[in-house]
Image 1 (spheres, rainbow, N blue to C red):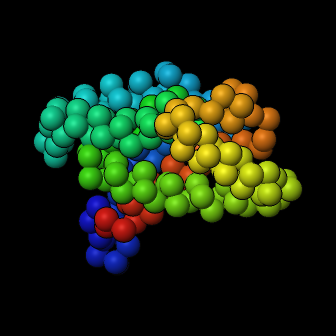
Image 2 (image 1 turned 120 degrees about the vertical axis):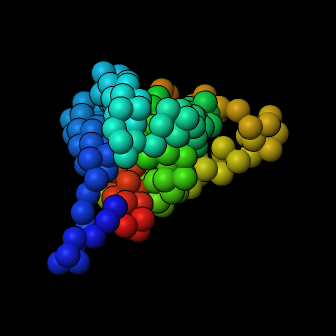
Length: 181
């Protein structure tokens, strides 16, 4: 991102596009509890086209490596049953648009925002004590059985409050773009 003569931040087409589709992912995740494939796969396909054709595009290798890094950062949480596939695909799409370095920063900032929001949700629903008990159960299970999903604590089986994780990812994206300007 560059700055304008008045000192404000000038968004690039790439930054504007990633903000629009990540914002749309927030809306659908909050409304429906899911992020549609048409949004994530469409964003990935468009990232390849834009970066290949635009003069200021970063090229297909940048998009591909960003996609892989974005996919890899949250995939372990999905594999353990603690995150939905839509969240992982959203990070992959963000990585495709922004490249590997900003994908990692977005994931880190998003994880911090997610932790804060998760504590807020747990406090507001009276679930905080249960969350800590479940965390303890998970760590004990992993110590005995190795790191694997704990069936009764996965998204598919746990009835605790849910956090639409597109929201912390979007917050992480905003912080990343702001800090990189």
